[in-house]
Image (cartoon, rainbow, N blue to C red):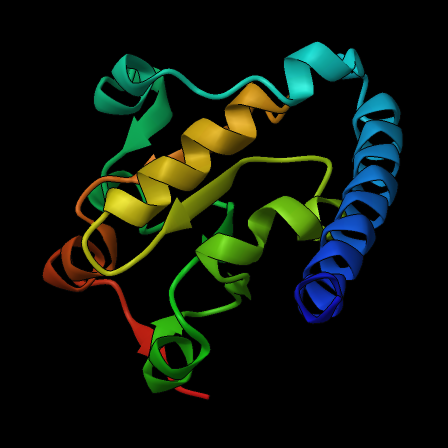
Length: 157
């Protein structure tokens, strides 16, 4: 009897997790539909193959030099602490692990450039969002380090 009682919180947590996931799936399907993306659940739940995470097409990566005077939206995917220490002026902050649940907050129009400190997190986010229908989302090659090296300014706060 005590064994069943001990497992009760785990069962409840699993059940609540499935309900939350189902409501998240419905929400994201609605957001994809608004953006004209594919709402087929088999596509949305498909795991990105490892080989796709290794290779980026040239159109998915931009250099800092090419962005210094460009009109783009920047998406900072670092931690909040890192963001507050310094970020590209006007950047939207959305930690890498929160991107999936905050898709609706991304600008629907215009080029968005994802970045982190080294460029790897920005590339992961760019791949993830490209798979979900964001066609004009790219990664900043070399991340914030490359931005600073190219003479790009940062703001704190």
